[in-house]
Length: 369
Length: 127
Image 1 (cartoon, each protein chain N blue to C red):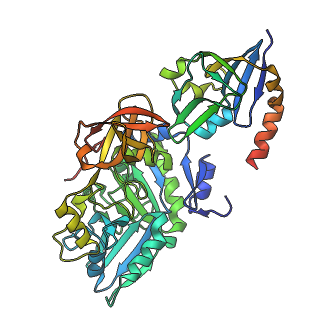
Image 2: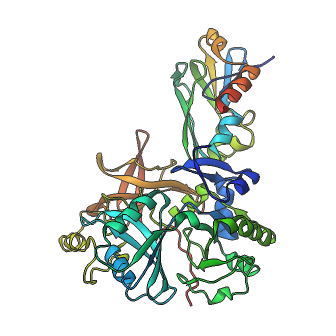
Image 3: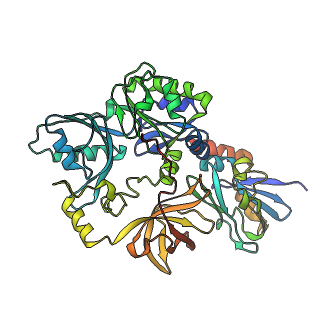
């Protein structure tokens, strides 16, 4: 693994006996004890993830809002101070460059948190679209570590390490100055598991200290370190899209069921015309959830059949640890997208009956007050 | 009756008693796969040549084919794995055998590794 990039927590993972894998050029833990255990820990108690590989792009200056609002499909102009929003970022043809979180840190200061494997591409894309705007853009990924603490006990665990009243942090809001274990952090009530929880940004030099402090504080409450394996099954159950699966340059956010995050009422943003046309003409295909009715596990790329005809492909598929059955997300023609429609998934040459179900598969009642 | 255990480079084991072979996957294979959640067993009566696909083991992470370590006819399958696939995580070399074969050609066993050779092979593969 010597050529792989290491997060500041590499040694901590190794010490915990994690199984490290090559994840887009990063050495990251896929699991510590087991994916199912870690998945369950996050749903029932709490899990701690190292997500330091994620990319961070800092946007500051008088035209910061104009730039960000032009780049993404969601509406940033109405954001409150310290609010966070989820948004796709599109090419002019409506295909997706990436999906990201936008943090409003000040009136003239935004932070974009992007997918690790897209960081360089995204940063280049942002720079390409600067035009004559008065704004300073920096890729601060290397100087930013990120931990995610997720699960129903996350607030209790994190609360032991900070004087900030965490109950005051609303869902999809951040506190830019929230010291954790006496180290400077930006903390937001966000995450990628379908559970309540926090994402913690800090200096790489502080990451291990915070990681260990969280594990210590969380031990009596059943906190487990959790790897990429559980991260994927958790986000899958919650139907949170994964770039390269549900989203890509060939899939529009409307097709991916993310219309809520595409504000066509905005004056202009990259991809608006294409997405508006797509909406006016009506979508040809759409992402759906599928529940498999026979024993078998659907995986990415498996063909989806209507009768004997291949009509689409699985974009993500897994055995759901929570529901103990095979579930899939798939992109299919709209005529097959209605809940209750019977389809089949070709699992290694044999058609397995499946039915279109409502998504998300797993829905938690977030605390939003 | 004394039994002999042999191993393949694909991490299957075979326990031979008389002309019957119990077949499974090794601890190493199970460790690599992680939590096993589904095992697709062969049909009794299936005839497989050495190296042909016999079963499929799926973990949360991955799908792995199990190949016949020796050729033969399937005389039994471990139905316990249908209800409890994670038996493979608990006892891959014992309770969690996958299928039994009536060996067609005993000579094929000679090409497989014994326990020491397999251990050496794992070390080599790990490097």
